[in-house]
Length: 348
Image (cartoon, rainbow, N blue to C red):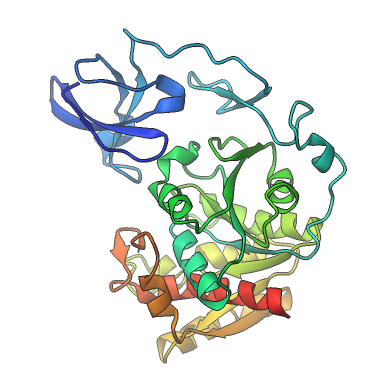
């Protein structure tokens, strides 16, 4: 290894010299320790070599000559199970947890708004819309395991925490590294409400959306399952639409087929599906596209005045699929509109 660069919470960025030239790499400190200049490192370059994945890094598997100490302590949840880098964590919902007595019989979110989004990039825009409408709201991020499993991969979450835009995070399923760890989305939502004491939760997968171009083969299908989980726990699901005026793929222009499938086919419970009031003809296309969702959901039209300014105040630069706000404003406005609606539910 030749260079150690600044990373963010829980990570170290490296430049590693390989027989094929220098390679940018990322190390998760909790898994492999802290690499130093001169260390030999074992890299997984599979996604990097293909040009796949958010971030563009090879991943450090181990520092063979200086392994981290064995981790001892409470916790019996194994995440990334039966992979070479499986990790054991203390689950908020297991008997060793200080919150176990709180969660053992917890069964109700008490109507808490839960904003559900497909892409991780929705998170800062949702928060921008929410805080512009209701400053001081306590919000938690609940990360599902459809994308990155380590929460540490998200520089966005690190920056939002540093700016106090998030009270905390909960990683559920196989995802790990949150302030709280939970077995399922259900216990993760209950932990956000009853342990972190938040007013609103935002549920998205981690960075690195997976899609195949087929109707059902995309990780965002979990958005529909999240709506069902929120309903089962007596919460108030707020569905964020994935929209685009700039995506080169027809299936994602206008309202993405991801949203139409997740809310129209997978979500069996009702949600408030938020449609941003955008100028014609694009705004008319969005409204027409979601008409079929009215059979199950409440379609809520939300004005977008002032949301561009709110997004500009985000502590992180918004970007989705490599596109900035200026390159695909409707996507970010749709996310911020969902945040604005969640804030309105708290004041009803």
